[in-house]
Image (tube, rainbow, N blue to C red; front, side, top):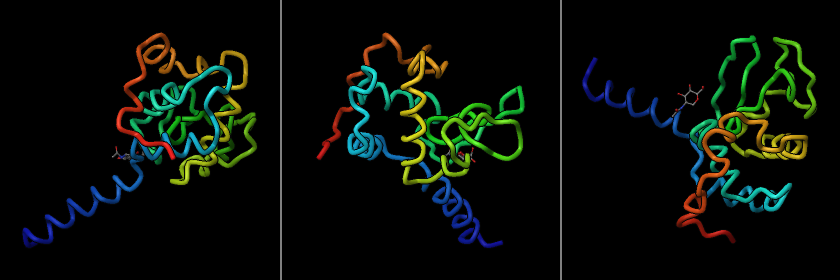
Length: 148
Ligand SMILES: *[C@@H]1O[C@H](CO)[C@@H](O)[C@H](O)[C@H]1NC(C)=O
């Protein structure tokens, strides 16, 4: 194989992966448009921190849990409670196919996450948010982002 082709293989594959990486300020803009601010008292910074600690802004992230359930998308939403992935029991509280949570439009993820936030515990339902975002200074998450 020529080194040129090898280079393309490596960089083209990287490009495919990166297509699902969401830019921080783009996410801020979409969240702002979807009016998450103030919902249950959480700020845009809380939401950005959540996406960072859960998926590192990877909208296509899927992770298998020890109990056989899976976490999907930018907010790592769990199939046991929130969406149906047709491979394990699900309460499917968000009434959606887990695959929808991998869409780069992010709209299904945001809509389901809003529902989770509105439940008892709010963002504390995400262990990583509780550990890494709650009570931490978060204002820098919006640095350089121009909403509107
Ligand atoms: C995003 O998540 C997918 C699925 O878990 C993974 O295959 C891919 O490597 C991740 N991309 C990056 C850039 O981390």
